[in-house]
Image (cartoon, rainbow, N blue to C red; front, side):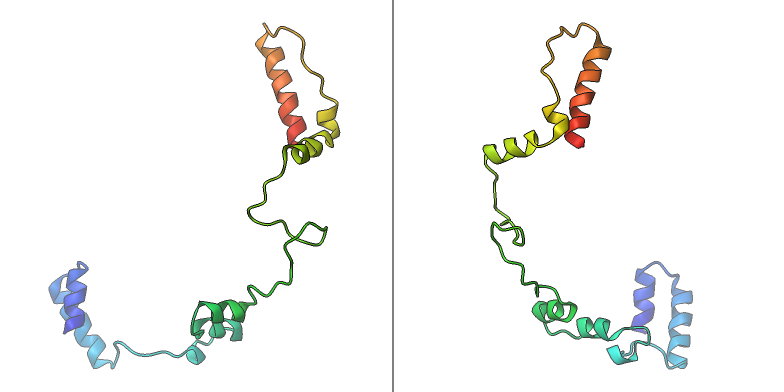
Length: 129
């Protein structure tokens, strides 16, 4: 009654664990094998993933890694993962936002916190837009 010992280890009272194990054995239950074909609600794709021999086969089954997107600098290419934009590129991109271009440098002495807060909020809003 190894199953009863496992149940006791999980906190089931020994008398109850023995009875449960006895009923499982008498009913013909217990450990069994199930094939993917026996899983009635598994799709063909799901069965392919479950039976894939390795990670590469699982990725192939779901179509991962099949993109023909190339790394490059054209409009139809992807940027490399280690790409770092130049400061000129960042500056140009920020200047392109009309809301940022319209901002003027504050010249007032912000003794009033409400005015300072409003100025900061307008910069944040422009950057978010």
